[in-house]
Amino acid sequence: MPNYRCCVAGCNNDSRYPDRLFKRTQVTELKFHYFPKDSLKRQHWVNQVKKGLINFTVSDNKVVCSNHFEFGKPTFAFPNPTLYMNIRNAEKESSTKRRKLERFDVILESEANSSSTSLTLENKHCDKSIQCNEPIRRSIIFADLTRDSDVQFFTGLANSNAFEMLFSYLQRKGNVMHYWKGSKNTNKNLSSPRDLKTITLKSLTLQQEFLLVMMRLRLGLLTEDLAHRFMISISVVSS
Image (cartoon, rainbow, N blue to C red; front, side):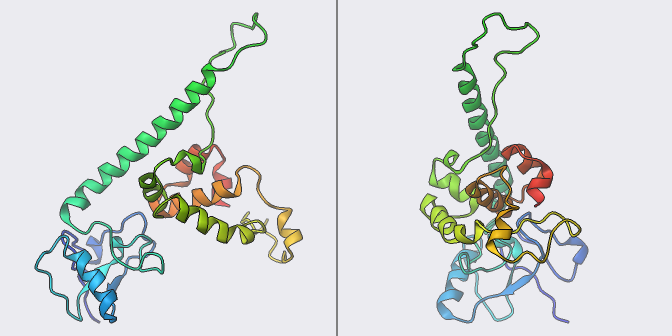
């Protein structure tokens, strides 16, 4: 059985030592991928690896592990390894991701506070036990991602136009999507669009559901985290 070791700088994933393998959050199953045989595609991979290894030379037995791909493997939209391609980026990625998530939370909290201060009480003699200025939280919407860099960070897509184009393409099927409610509660015989529409969840808009899925794929957020951000139950996230 052949052995594989990732050739990216700073990555120590080696199939000879399965107990030492490290899998990042966007990876479902850690695998090792050979360089493409197509010369142009192959060169794209080489250019990425050279970001950490200037004198890198490709050979037929060189491989790149799943950690360096947007979705844990080469895809049509993201065919090249682009993540953690040098030691410095790998060390800083975690702290950068944490700072961006914290900044996004601050933006939402600030908007919630500003919304609450604009409210007035119709009853001036309200009960003192009522907290009149309690901040009003709201669910995340795509419009909160005001910059292309935010769109890329939270969804993995290049910009707002890419997000909207992909959503528009999927929207027709999304309108008749069959939601998972567990093996006992999900009717596997539903087939017509009319039947499927009757079980559509109303907690989020379809665009919010798409954003939630993209954030989970891109950032590997837990269901509890997503439920808090979108102000829904954990069971709705899982469905």
